Length: 320
Image (cartoon, rainbow, N blue to C red; front, side, top):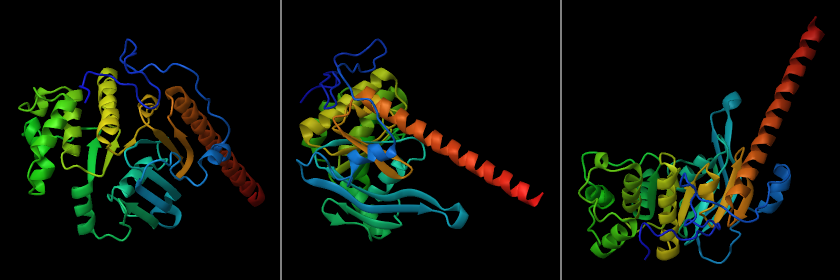
């Protein structure tokens, strides 16, 4: 197992040994520019299944719909989303604000209900699970990594890592704990409280906490959002190593194209639909693609505003 300071090359082609002066990963070589409209992008994501197709499926969504509100206030957060996540893979979910990326993660993790569709988690249909069943699922099979770390300030690192087991009244697997501590470089931090650690160190503790119960899937919500570029590179490298060396399955929501370049695959949502699905994403490619999608969204909004203004003008003219 590589140490915290070893910077392996992630699947996205980023050499973490080559960091720029700000600590951001350099992405060299040719990348594909984002092309065309949603319809053109959608042609590459047809079916929205798992494109790698080499590993068992850890998690699958079928025709997922999530609506909020009713009537004039109805919001379609997810529109018939079908997607699979392979076991032992690192997947990024991306998209502009309001695209549905966080909603997708929350529904997949059993944190939010769905309007219609089906979710298969670790071979089990969880679509109709009640609250007690979902709580047990999250406790037994899901790990969470949050942007804000969510460590308990009165406890030291060791106690925070053990918290999921403490709440579940389970014993600690010392061999697994030692492996996590060594992998994440936390040997000298176990007696430190959160206030005594840097942001990067706190996030490493949070990662260990997410993994201590040996979950089937880790969900990471903007895990580098509160970190500087150097700490971000370290945390993303560690997550990459957890997939490569331990076979962990990680689904990460991020808006950061560089973060996505550490993953095996990047899925992009817009207006509640998957509009792109890329294997081995490159930072520049994903940045260009996100820019293209944002430009199209702005164009659609401008057209809708113009149409609405024209309709109001026509109505006023007819009533004059």
